Length: 463
Image (cartoon, rainbow, N blue to C red; front, side, top):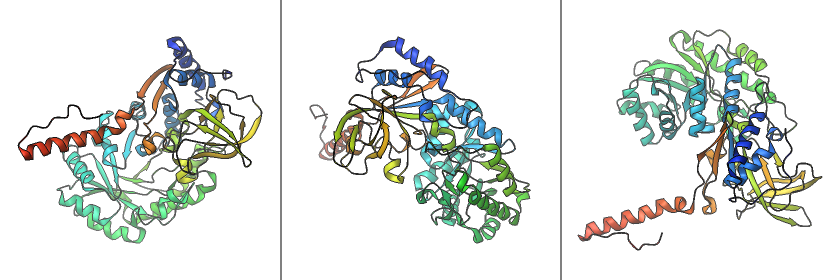
């Protein structure tokens, strides 16, 4: 890895096509096809600095080659399973197109994800829609899509969902989401396997399966135990898998096309955490499943995209206090909400000066809330104003959970693939943030004019 440059220009000044070509070439060195983990220190800091100079900050930098490698590593370990990508982790078109090109199918948890998968080129006959308390518009879209593409599978986690599907004339492929009563993962808010919100209670599934066979084409069972599963959670995860496999045999797995054990496989966020050995994981999962006539399905999401993206952010404030050194950056919880929402740890590197002496600092963004903090008293090479920091493992639920809090336009996202850099999401402007309000105002003024029999335009209205 080349060392980072000692300094950098301000965002927006640009560094020219030559610098971007250099960054693209350098990023080629960052792919580790044989490595199950990419630490934030594995990214080439000189490349990140050049990209930040050209595109400004905060900036999401996505390596789609790494997305491909992660998927292929996972699918290679589970060569007898049908591996689908759980789109909710990152629905960016660059990610979806990369995975579709790799041969992955897509699992969707909402109408918007179905629409985005289709727009990215997915065959609707290969899609699986896991409906969680689906709004009417979501079920309307799924029923309409299924009418034209009978290969679509809709997974329901409530009797009510199946009744609502039937009322829409849908009688196609369905799967039952099971609540196995076991939840695992990095935080209680993602331990879906024991949360009553998700799935049919375990003991009620056989009777429901018998009922649904007369109303739909029941093709599978589905479960999701939790998210961020690493070695310490693996035994519980496999115990839940075993319960669902037993349930499949009870409802007669010979009549099912698949049993879907979901995703949830984690990646190391802390520097001292070790990555999952996927060959070992595959052995344990296989032992937990046992003999099944149905195909095993798996849905990795975080595992595929987490370490394929970083956020580059610029230091704007360094403040000494009696308690800590406060380092202010231009990224915020609107850019990456996981630390505030889940108390999640994300690794941070000083891109501009990795060789400085470490000092405990607290890094936070510009939002007026104490939750807008990326780390507290963490040893980092002492940041100075205008330094660039990289926040690692931002590919899963990074841009996906970004918001307009404090009326902040969302950052740009650039994708790097095979030595080429392209903007896959432009940086938003305040015009983007306020557009829906201005359009609503224009709509209301036009409607008021129609009621009065007048023609009311929008000329002269403030933007």
